[in-house]
Length: 326
Image (cartoon, one colour):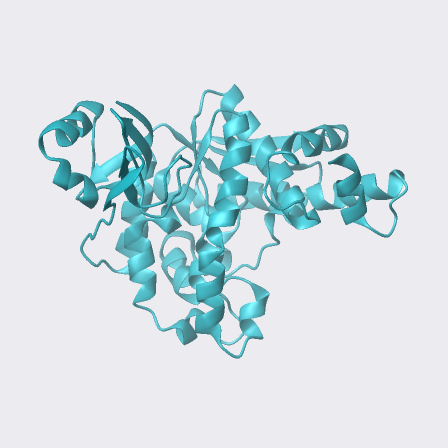
């Protein structure tokens, strides 16, 4: 048996021996297992229900000899959003490092997990400055603030471009930022990086949710698009022998979020309102309701890629510069 990631049953993390026992003696239980995993045994394989962990079979399926034999479809009890997030983070915190930008998504995870965290950015970038302030305010103990040298960005960009499915300026800048996070994690002995992916799509974090005429449809479309984001993030992480763990995509959190009417994801101009309400219990209102820049902008990486494009003769098109590198 080989497993990449981790598995749980009814909120308890399973050991390798327990997983082997399930496979051999109680295979029907496998369908009820949660976690983030790609499991292989004999001529069979199985993958977690949302496909967080990459693998050679469809998300949420059990496949033997190339034939789908069953589904991975855990159905834990319905929890409040607060309890669901807390449980999701606690299940993932062992031996992890938290990708911490100081925004509400990562700050809530970091506060609950109380694990080492890492922030990356160009010197003087918004994320480095803001994350230092937030870490002090919420009492984080083991924080690591890593300055990216501008000269490193081009090299990292050339590494990630062959790995990611969509080669746009936004996708490339996110992947480049992720590269520095995962590289630091590998160099410091971490395989699991717990991050805030999925929060924007689940709770309505993007500016476009304020403008749409059908927030339910927009949320559904964006949530379905998470698989492409996952391919990008996990491909970059795998390059550094790490993986991204996503508590906001835990089945408990997804289910709790699904109980909230889509219209209540916004409160006036405030996005991700239900998540911010929960976060305020742990972080206080000022941090919970702070509107932070997206990773690629807050880290300063997008600005540096734009500068590289200009310096290399692509003043009016970052996309053409990326195409040139690729």
